[in-house]
Image (cartoon, rainbow, N blue to C red):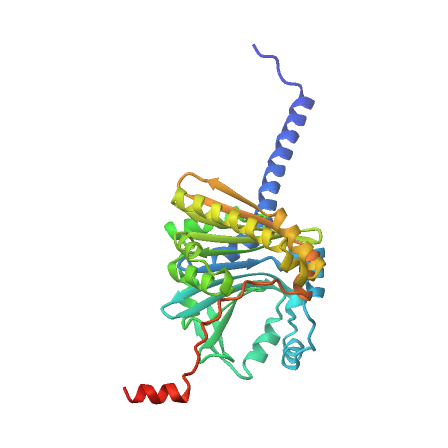
Length: 363
């Protein structure tokens, strides 16, 4: 027969188990609170989006790099309209915005957006200001507010999702857009990439198509437009760009993802070649003569620190490019411009002389 457990031991064991249960649920709840704001903001992004951009402004705000970046950006005089907006609504994005996610969705020739933002919003003041020049409609349980857009014929609509969360869009039916269920294969694909970027307070996820690739290469400077690069970018399914401040530097990680291992390896080889050629160009005698030495050193420092690698995730393969944006680089970009190859000049043709024109007219 098993001897009875002493009363003090039983009480101690019960307390230990109870504390363990409390600690477990506290840990679970802490994790939920810590990640729910980011996750629920991103969960509201439409699954047919072309691109999603995210910024955790509250995390970025105290970063030394962001302070340096803010000082680097040319300061302008305060805009009178924005100053009035701050006075009337009580909202200043530099102070009150905590995080924001923006989805861009291509609809034929147009692109629509949906933004969900967390911050400190005085709803009473914002509604009063809006109704001076806008309107309100009740759709189900939501109050949708409409304001005219300044640059297009579309209206901007917004609604408060909760006390510290707002959604706004130029879509004609914001309520329907927010009511879509984030389910299916598309939703899983977006969640997977958001999860990979969980440690980055600043990122963009782009679902690739031919139009996106063409836009990227068409905006490159003339000397750097590459049909080979354009063709390889056209074969990528996803592109992600993430930034994370590390002290007074910003670590940038870019990935291009494809189901084709051959595409990814060719792109990695091409990018490695571009890095080598760029370094060789900066070391050339012409560049040494024409480019400020401090700017040249900053560009070389970034190029030498860049790394191109190949990642195999089974079904998909990726090429990853990592580099750091440093204060030296920001100073170089502001004070000097890199020397780009000039496009070839069109051949000159001499105008025929009057005698030659006369001879030609008699033939």
